[in-house]
Image (cartoon, rainbow over all chains, first blue to last red; front, side):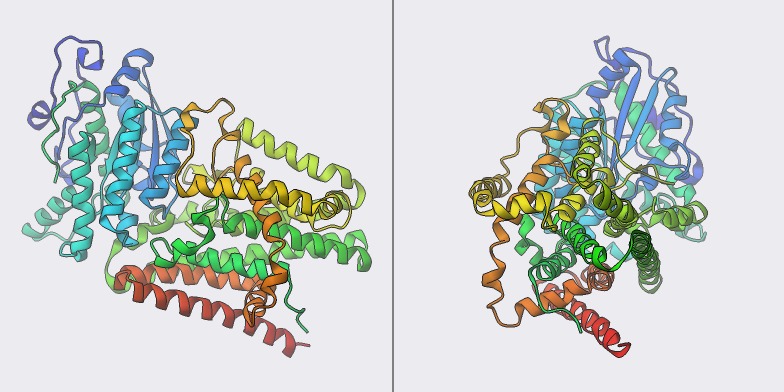
Length: 254
Length: 359
């Protein structure tokens, strides 16, 4: 739990969930890369929801919801199960609004409607890959995402950005890397949580290569990979719920 | 012999070309399509004209067919569209899988809601057949299938209880907005991109307005007066789109969908704006038909809309793959658009050539 303890910014007594004792997190399986990165970015609005209602409503936006929520498409998302198991008494509702192929600009407009209609505590936004595939100019992408993130913050909705995939073929693609960097910069500048899927996949890929194992597919394109992703997000949400509010941006998750 | 160019086929062809362009996100030519200055887009036009065409078919059927034959004919049309959806979805999955195989880039397998097809094929294939699992940009035909399945019922209501048609459709539409409800997706939980309970309304409006009696008659008699109201609506909503003058959706009163701009639920602002746009542009064809080749070019696409739509959907996906592989640039985009529209025309031409061959 060393990495987690470092990531958790356990709070002094206050009015948010950080005043409560953070629950013990189950270890992340080795095949998912162990503890992984815990950013410790607070989710202040969700913390209030946890304390007042013991309920968390998450709206998932983006291309491939299965890839982010974990489990099989036909069953309740693994992310929901993990959060409810970790935080006793918490009722998690996940509303899946992932329309595929949607670019950040269009998704941004739809997110506003979903906030108005579903009143979520968290928007889990898988963003960047479609824009990268469609070659949207990086500056347009940056503006679309940052405007939406600011709008969500102004409307007291926490946002978690789920970043781009890691693909060996795209490591040296300057455009793909530009979109990736842009998303990282937005997360840092706006002090919002970004799940670094790319980095996690890259580490697993390197570890596998170094040990002479076949390439792993964690965090993408296999049920096991999707489950790793869900565990990774669940840990970050749990930490974020009990993390102390900070005004300082976290370490850039690049 | 195929019919001569006319306004309905022309606008249907126009809708097909703009759907093809809009379904290649990031394409430079996308900014030239009318959705950049209109709240409604080519999807509304396509569904409205599908209803209009059904209305014309039923009118012709009135003269030639008894009720049973008319219902059987419309049911057969629904089956044809369903078969087309299954075929193009299979081809799209193969296109994605083929691209992933050739390039070695597995990311492509997650594109357009295809991940579940490869991750959980048993259930997802059932979903594809039931139309409860839809690939991104392959989601208009499932709506069209549902609407055409309703076609025989629509024809029966039209034949025996015509005054009930639009009010009943409006009641379902408003219930879908107020409750709100829609069709669910499965096995991936979610909802249809095109809510059939909402979109049926514009289909029925197209059907009703195509007729010379009832609502269609009233509108035809008063079209000049209607255009006086329509022009300011079109102008005002264009400014709203251009300058993003939409109110904060969280500040709207309940039931919110009645006051928001949402495509999935075809919210009232989209219906009103589309009808205004249709009223204004219904005057345009008399001028357009004087332009050399353009009316015939788009009309041949409109006359063969199902074949053109199917090929267009696959060309859009191919266009996305090409842009991904060769990097979207003005030159690549121009090649994609010019060759794509050319192939749409070729599809329509071959369709009519085959009809001529079979007599």
